[in-house]
Image (cartoon, rainbow, N blue to C red; front, side, top):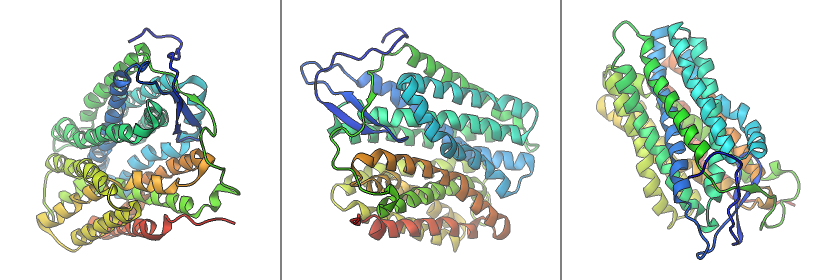
Length: 433
């Protein structure tokens, strides 16, 4: 561990390994030989904490939605503005974040992201004190801007931090901790927010947890300011095959993949956003919000378990077919929950999380296949498609207000049907003239 100051590149002499920056730059980091290699483990341990934290914060939205809906007497569309403001930040801030990171470096970019997210968490205090829903939405947007900057900086950095042949392993490991965060988030929110809320709607119950999150983010920012991280630099076109001719948007598998990311993130977030209210329905489980929030961990925990199962399956079967199988499984489970009642309806929708596990990385990988030097451009477009998490929940909320939550699950059904198509046909690379 080193004192804060200018980042100094370690004296490494091995060939470089390339990684893709989601905002549009390519990265290289010196990869050491076995004789000169310093250990990257301490840096990876600290970076892994980022993945855990933003997973936890993201899944807390699923607790905030029913809590704020009851307090402010919101419709489902109004309640879904929580996700609209949070995931809308990905669309607004992704590209500017990439420019900022290129200018100030990855360590400083991570620090700025942590501090920004911390400020967003602090914004919950006056929002609760004034009982203002617009202030909550503004605080969520600031929080999400910080999380977006963290993702833009940390994802490619982890990929580039070591030998290129093990980059997928490093990303899977850190993503597993992200899933751990999304699994624990509902438990934390249920215990510290929903369980403490009385019959009257105490908006102040969010103040303590989010002040704690703000303090944690600031502490992590301080650790990063004192921690030495190997320097990663940008270099376009290192070891890339020939550049794809013509417009990138002529690449059918990429364009359809952008739509795939949009509908996948939208479906996953929409389902999670409605689960607490859905399980509170007397025809389903009739649970109080605090109990339903705890069961929400099964949805996100299923994604964590499925990541390991899916990783094994992807070694034996074609990625497109595994993707289509998982999406078809999600469709079947959602149809079962739409036309059933009681605990069966509850567990079938919770089991969708298991099938969600491999979808994002698989769609992403298929969409950037054979883009050559323009892989980073395609990666940036795919990251911006995460805005689906802002729009699809609002659309589902529109129908939930009119036909009920159970019937509104047809919206994610349509999303997963598209992913079935993409896995079987849309992901195939078509040669361009």
